[in-house]
Length: 249
Image (cartoon, rainbow, N blue to C red; front, top):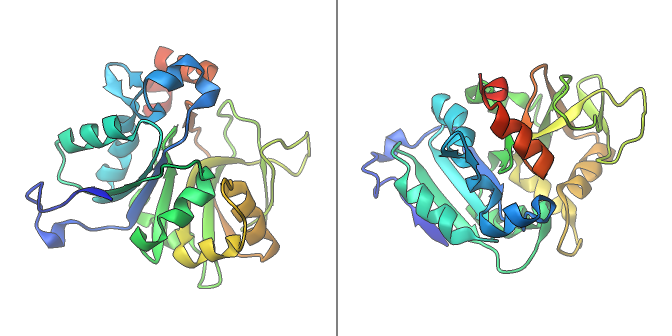
């Protein structure tokens, strides 16, 4: 494990506060083609700044200071950039040498995770009042809470919601009139939810975990109405670079 600790940044122990933020940023970026071979997605430039700086801004504005990064592909540039971040934050990380998938990477990081943590995908951006994140879990039965939006974000709606719970999830959803919401790449998870993966072998996607929680009726929905940014394809990245203020204001 690599770490940039609060002490390294001169942060008193009691200043590293708020819900732990876990950032998944270890994918190969294959959908990005040549872009993904030169830089990790999370460091792609937007208006002269790495995308990571934009991703961190609303989280730090909410007072969150504790971050764990799940890294893999091109991890070293990410770690080097994090050491240069001016804000007083505490960063821990682990680097996977095998492709585990998004859920598999979380499972590999389990010993580093708090009992409840905020998960953010490293290629998405959504400005929310993140200090409220622990309250997105409705009650103790909820093992996770997925943030879904009704706004068009350039990503096909993939989530069904009924009575405050996610009842259907399919990244390749057809034109189902009940599928009116889109997964934003942000959710709150209880660490124990990762045990629902059971004997699933890596690589395993978060979709597998979400559908397991849906069957257990333990996946809450946190509804928002603003668009989010996903730079996971060349087209989406190009659109965002052309007008970043459309999604960051």
